[in-house]
Image (cartoon, rainbow, N blue to C red; front, top):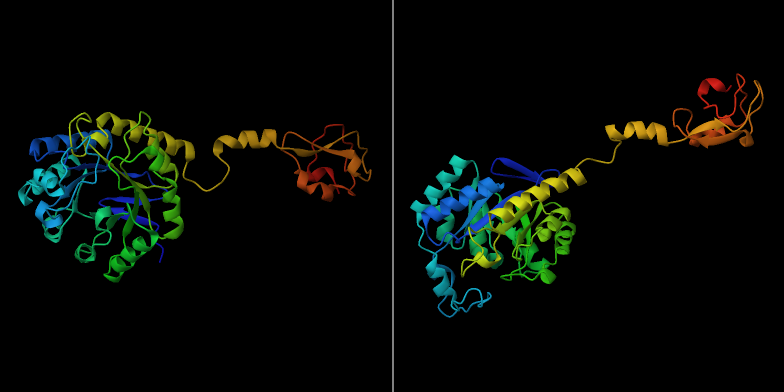
Length: 353
């Protein structure tokens, strides 16, 4: 059965719909409830469909021996455990507050669970789950998320097609079939030269029954071209880290978009949708006048006397297209004129017998 559309919260997402925009707040709230709420407000105001967070306890996802894999010029902490401990202070109470605030503003609340306990904590707060690229091979977590019987956004950074297929097969084996596959590059930040947006097309070819999206880690550009290009290539769920200030030190701020970027991005995508349209090839209402005026009809090349047997040399095809179409010229040749036809007369069915 084809899954060429998916319901995320209250919205249906497919090739024919606007992209579903996720403002990935992550832990850019720095464990401040007021900051988190402000970011939700700005995400809503900027046109995002969802505000996404990250839910974890540092000691459950990383050992003390795990080293950094991010740009240490931007985030100087070199221990994963040390960095994650800075931002794992939110409890169930905080996420409930944020979920309620999202409901008030009519923006979807999402959070990525990074451990099994987080999956249960979020269950009644989220309508669908996001799985991080880092957990695409974490089958115990996949099984736990699948058990909730909700749609899943699956990021695929640093993974092979074989690994993606294994994860999808495992999720489906555990009765989860509503899955969006997100192209992602697992670098913080990702250089434009490594964005590899054609992988979106690759995912569409290899997994044609799934909605494809894009989770972006590149630095925001003035025209947000990476994301608009991803949309043109077929991404219908778009996730981008979101901050109140890109100049803030550390963590994900340096590769996040801010409110101005989000507004620019949603505006540009809206413009692009107008340009590319979403209909099958047909004649537009605005083209009908041009169609009649610019197309050609079979026309008398010279005077044709009544009852004369019409030859090919008597005919020419000229504008406008209000008479017999040129493709019917072989049916006119050999017929008799029912009346005198002057030069440039546009021939109709009643002119021949």
